[in-house]
Image (cartoon, rainbow over all chains, first blue to last red; front, side, top):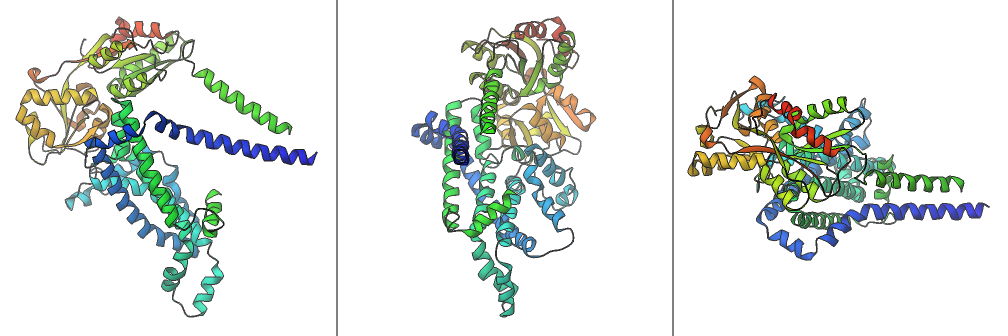
Length: 279
Length: 253
């Protein structure tokens, strides 16, 4: 009886995985079956597509630089120190993950808009952020930084604290431990966080539309261009969609490969980060 | 074992229920896809219609008319199309997707500027450094704006277009950018500017520079619309429906 039950359970697992895979892949496969290589290349020939791709890649690169340089040490602090209100800080950092894009857009306007909280000081400096390329980057950072910080924190937390104690006993400074040991050990987890953040940045739509607007070559990212094209030319929109999938997929794969392996066997930190992130 | 069979059955029945609901034709809800600038009158119309016909569920969704047309072209269960452009509705009719469109209202184009803006007249739109929000070329409000600017003058239009900081996806986007002070001025419908109240200065384009703005409604025929869609369409295009537009500053068709 229990053998049957085991077999049934194993079957259920396989069925669940197959259903998951089928459902998640179908829309992506459909884009490529309806938009062949011809449409993909054709979409690249459109100047607005090239402009949008450039805006997306440039903004995402700047956003990622900010997220990695500020978010990684912040995550390290959260992972290695206990202080009053730590859980509150973590929750606050994770909040943008669950915010709808429209709320993110409204929030960014309420903070950085000319009528917003920082509007007066910003305009006295002669700065106006909405509808600029800076606004595109800020929207990307706002929605995707939490994904990296959360994953990086889990990765740092998964590094055995006894190693850190030992390094201090042997006279290593905290800075030396961080740069020489903690960062390399957490690299797979950091790579996973960066991957998620990059994907989210490239896909950002709603907050960008509200906060940064849409101007070709300046603030119109690939997702905005896809929506605008969708209204008049579905085939061209499919081509742009395929382009975004191809670019995002290639970038994600690169980050994963650079992050040192995809499988948990080779990357215990990544596995631990995954477990932490799932709870 | 039994739970597994139960789970599979439940999953299958959920999926088939979902498919059944999207079958379209039948006594389902009537979905009205309307231009973003019609959000107020169409919502009020739907609410009142449901009061008088409790058996009918009228759902309204708003976007740029071009986005709604794109959805109809993809066969996404919209029953009644209310477009801010007669040409767009005629195009869908020409493609065999809708019945002939019926004009239901008109509108005029204005410039709305926050009070601290340097823009106080149409002439100011081409001043260097002015930040302008308009619709993109595909959405009617953006197409109308381009016509109006060119009617003012070709050289003026070129200079004003260089001041455009954002090409919004629909009329609401322009309103949002102006109300937040993210731009110095936006080219929008008079009815949308009225919604901003005294927070903005409203300057209409001169009558000779006004594009012909006409809204048209059309019953979607492919895929087959919901059973009650015809009656909703009749009321919307009849006297009782037009009242909702006249009340809110729209002009006669």
